[in-house]
Image: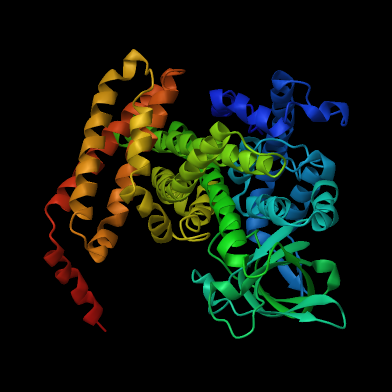
Length: 573
């Protein structure tokens, strides 16, 4: 099998992005660890060399171990034995291979056994694992929980749990959803009460749809304040499976990602430790955890798009019809070129978002060590705003594109794609969850629309326009500017109505218009380094212009009164 790091040139583009130097210097704090840890880098070049070496190992394991196991894992799946989850044999082999290679906790601090790698490297690893097996990425990628502990937990809790992730490859879970609290997490009712005699918090209740629910370390959202029914009564707790106070009632029988156990859990007087402050569970900690998870779904979606595109491309070269490979037909090569442009666009957005998130998170961490300079604080706020805006946009666009790319790749296979003889059948099923979990596409629009109305997206478009683009994309720049002008006019037309329902009605159209423009600019910027990216930029921008123009015309020709026709459906039985 291929090395999933070496066979993807996009990774080198993003590892060598101009902002990476700043990220590495902020993360390494002047490379102060070089005198404490023999594996710590001495300078920027040494750090990047380390990233390449470790990612190369990750790429090799993804290609040689995880990808070959994907089909058997999909067929076998996990099972429940004596109230505990038993992974499929291939899943366990994947886990052991990564554990032996020391590839758990790669972005956690060295003092806990981690490698202190940038978020970009963790995201790249997530993407490669997802390309190999999306279901297994759910298990490996839940190290996000450890990152949340590192950010918010006490030093005592960090010393207790983080070395287990780094050195023992402990798996994680985030236990949020309940039977009566899906997307509405403020309705969570699993109870946490303080036991004076045992001097610990005890958890009682049921959680449902919990990915890797029988993980070694779980972050649990629970109601700690008696008599409350809203977000202010919720706190975050860490639970250790070794206590044996939970039971896996069942594993859901899912359409896809079948290797990832999605569990229903019962907590019975389960001892747990408070993370951070009481009452801040949903308001602060889960929001941070969910944003990290949405970045993870962006990586997952991009990795799956990569796998589906490659399967479609391979089949189109191999399949002969009417005396020639089907890739020779315009209907097929148009699909593949469009799929590739969506894949490149998703990846460009993924790493742009990761960079924004990382810079502001690093400044937040530094602010706990010393007072930030005024310029640093201003920069932190700017990147925080961009991260907040780009995270839901990434999750929306990449997951939708993931579904579209998988759909088209299966279509290229024709009837064969509907059979279990080809990997695309599994990829197609796996793709469907990406725009549902960790917040549906509709919820991403809810999170993104305020950045439409406050001008965050528009301002960033204008920042991108200041780029010194290569001459070959000059005509595309004119198209992009026209798209940006149409977008601004559409936003003004909707906002000026002063009607919240009318804004909600058009929200997805406006957010997607912003997405098409922003992703187009990112591809054009990449186009300065490679003709392949320029071709994707040309395909993507021209298609984006047509889509945005359709949305623009629709918005400009729909009045608030026209919504009445849509509302009539509420009267249907």
